[in-house]
Length: 298
Image 1 (tube, rainbow, N blue to C red):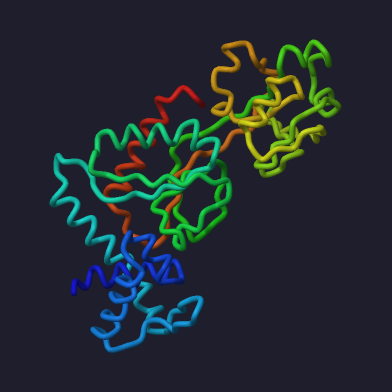
Image 2 (image 1 turned 90 degrees about the vertical axis):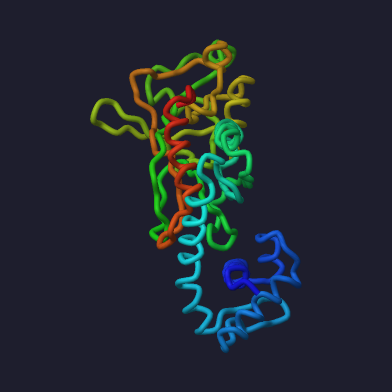
């Protein structure tokens, strides 16, 4: 039996905590995954997992192997890819995680453009506003908005977003336009709970930071939903520019308080520390950085 398949089955089982999860990640049967791991244990003459009815846990020998096996597999994949891919483009699977709104508005299209040049490549895009467990879920690359505090992850900045305060013409006619941050604090706002401080909106006036505490009837966990509510006249929204689409050009929403600079932050690619990054994943990050620089959404 191929030791590479055995190592892949071992790593996937260790990362997911079960043979079933490993089988789903590898695209093979549960029985075959278990067989590969058993043959690796027989080859090495040690037990790698402690098995229970619900989960498998690593033995000390298994922990030692897991510390090195992923990097070895990554190096092998990179070597084989460089030799075989050439002008064919990349092949295999790239698993990408991204937040829902940004994923739907931008990431899915960007991945489509990357895949068009690599017809043998399979893209597995997983959209969620929670932070994915890269190791546990087998994610190659996560696209994240804002700062990442995870020291165990590596970060590469792809671009930056900026936020705008907006409201519909109907709302401004009924409620009056806020001219100052004090006015904004008294206005009916839409709270986006995906923001790090949902009710504390931060702005800059020159070198000075200004913070306003807002209130509102609606609280949502989606910038896109906040835009829709604002467009319907339910309040003032503070959202990333990419979530606005063409609403400003169409006159559906009006930017407010132009003398203040809205919150900005990085758009980043996140991947695991201590792993040799596969060539196709590095190429995807290069592509995303260039593609984002040309996108008219920021």
